[in-house]
Every structure is written in C-alpha cells, then in structure tokens.
Length: 155
Image 1 (cartoon, rainbow, N blue to C red):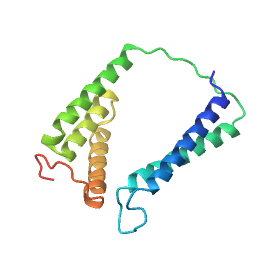
Image 2 (image 1 turned 90 degrees about the vertical axis):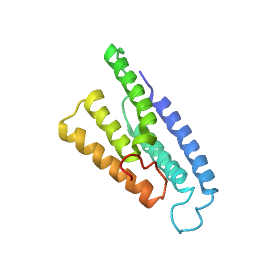
Image 3 (image 1 turned 135 degrees about the vertical axis):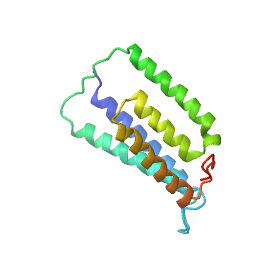
Image 4 (image 1 turned 180 degrees about the horizontal axis):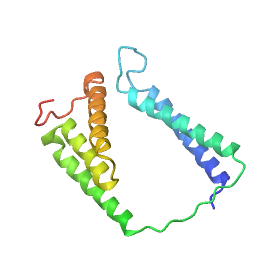
C-alpha cells in the first residue's frame, strides 16, 4: 500500500525541483526579448509544466480521503517482449533518422509502435503517425527553425 504521505513528499520535492529549474531557465538568454522562441523557451516551458503537474499531484493527494492500494502485477513475457521490441525499434529509428529524414522515419516509427507493440485499428495506425509527424515537423522546423535531416523526401 502506498501512502498519501509518500505522494505528498514526492510532489513537494518535484515542485521544489521544478521551481529551481524554472528559475535557472529564466537566466538563459532569450527570455527577456519577445522576438521569438529562443534557447530558454523549451526549458522554461518544461519547468512550468513540471511545477503544474507537481501541484496537481499535491492537491489531488491532499484532497483524497482514502489510501491508495497498489496491487503488484506480475511481469509476464509479453511485457518483456514489448519492451524489447520498443528498444530495438528505437535503435532502428536512430539508425534510419539521417537516411530517411525526420518526417518519414518518425511516421514509420510511430506506425510500427501502433501496429505491432500496441495494435490499433488501421486508421489509427496510419492517421496518428501522419498527423503527429507533420505537426511536430511544422512546430520544430518551420516555427522554431530547428534543422532536421531532410532524407529521401527532401523535406
């Protein structure tokens, strides 16, 4: 059985880390000028997100009236196989990233995970990777100007 006290302590520690991380992110160049996202954008965003999630955990733990019961689940071969497949697919993704480019390698990686590791319907296996890779490409390459490998498709 996990205690509410343990969750509250974890939330307070995470909140303190988030606040320290956010304060350090504010010291990075690019925060004071509203020209566009600079080197401090992502660290600042992550610090704020961690602080918010820590507060959610702290408030949820504080307002909860009952103790959480953690029932241990045995780890089966299927879970071990899935972890192995994910690790091998991550290595494949890293190896193909430069050759195929960001869009194609990311879409194929996500499609593989949705088809093999956690089987989904065909429209999810094709739609989610396409939309996710295109939206993340637009965010990072077009808006944030992060250079990604172009690969076979040339973009």
